[in-house]
Length: 225
Image (cartoon, rainbow, N blue to C red; front, side, top):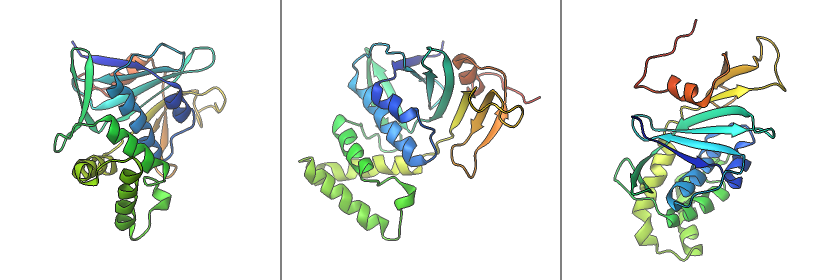
């Protein structure tokens, strides 16, 4: 039997996913908050925002199921989760796939600070980025009163995995507001996130379990008719 863990979406994550995700930097910002939610290990009450589901057995994917104001499931989306999740006695831990670096709350604080300074924003990338980025990390560690030598190696590995992971973003929408026949079907899948690559596939209404099953490599494939 598959092991699926679930978390209630908190206010901060809900604020991030209310807007459409269009860039990898938005995904990384969301990923940082989800990682924090996982390692804090404090259960959240169901506040009606929706749920996060992660299959620990055969999918490295994080699934979001979002409710509208009437508590009606209106959207599911998923992307590749770049860290390994382990669980022991109900306590969850994260580590990098390469190097096995354990991700701590202090790493999350550093990543949040770096992210808030636009370090992951593709529009801000320029020649000389590596020098600027190294300086930003050093200044961030100083601001947080953290020892540079103690964190530099681990942080480099964590950042490398964030920069290089393939998001493989897919979203299911029940979109009454923008429905336009076969041009913009009421129920559809959005494949990829950026404007230059995204496209739609019309579909029937999908519950979260069906959406997860489509992407499960351990079950039978779905077919486009």
